[in-house]
Length: 333
Image: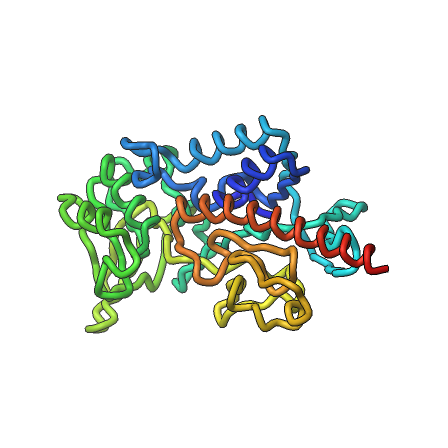
């Protein structure tokens, strides 16, 4: 469930290993990585690759191995029966049938957090954006633009926009750019001549007519506020996990991210199990989580791809353990 880097990688490996694989995606393949203008630190692409190109190629690869894609397919709920061969039943919006599976990988990622700025809703898509692509780049040419955030997505967007914009203001709530951003990227952002980093700053207000014309910034240390003329704000302030559709039996941390591995070893469903959960297995045996939705995951594209591959190995191990357990039960009977 989910076609970001983790879900797509899992689809490639699962389908190539002969598992019947179905990928459900509520919006479009790619996830947050799909909207990244340029990923420069992904293995095998020394000059970088756009998130859209990377995830499109992954989708083609999975499709070539036989994975089936259903988009848009909004998953409404997951029902679990440990005694059924097909232990998971997935309900899909607008679909009268129930999808039954022996194993499920949750790779739903996370939703963009919204700026707490006055009038923000008015400018969604007409001045407030959550991706910096060539289309938005045209709007920003020779203009002052604003990027809010301090992670890799914010740094990548700032660097991309700096090629055409007159000035890029990087608005950061904290006072340390390297806390959430890769070191190589933070160094590039700091030395780029037309990028100005505004630490301890937040966007308080957005204004304009049909499209965004101006924002108001506030220095949280001094309380000073000042206006900035801009046609575009790029919000890259993080995300919340897409886990609201999951049953309560799937344990999550305080922020809603899914616990896996040793963190769920003492869960009720595992107390009677003959084996320990795999590193990416949730509190329900046979249900896995990978990528940004997983508690403790490294929020990087390459890490999500790696977890997608690891999850498939875990799924195969889980299915084999269950098959061996069933065979042993039959022999005892």
